[in-house]
Image (cartoon, rainbow, N blue to C red; front, side):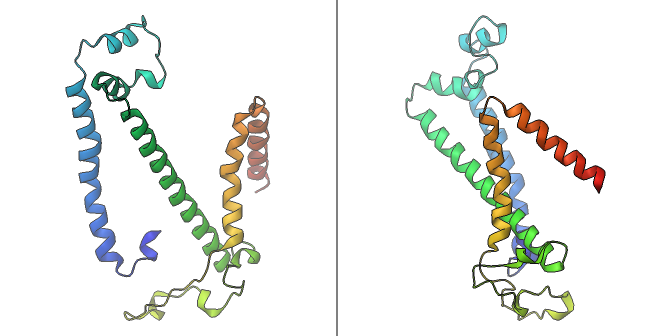
Length: 191
């Protein structure tokens, strides 16, 4: 998705993917190693949770990372980790919203979605600037962007689904989930 927006995707995307393995190695393996060093195998909190004699099994309190933070005795560390988690979750949500909006907008440009989804914040005009170009029509010197503004209606339709997740807060969320499953199943049968 991002490769279509990059100036030189063969160079930049290739370099970005090379760093993915280093990130996994440093963050996941390094994090597990650090926690393994900080928490001894016979830590009373960890042993108690695993044996079932201590409360917190099945919650965040059973996480080795939480136990390590408690053992270190740094009171602000859990708050810092929570802030990093919120930032990470927001970043992932932002990425998925961007991808879904761009995909829906692309479908509208190809005529596979309703035309009103072509509306952008640049005045709502669908000009030749928005047309899909064939690879043979794009020269190596092309720096023009093929879209302008934010596809507003695509964004609003995409944002309906995250807001539907707030229905799970209600005690009757099971009813709503059943309705959604029934709607999707009926749509599949009709299709």
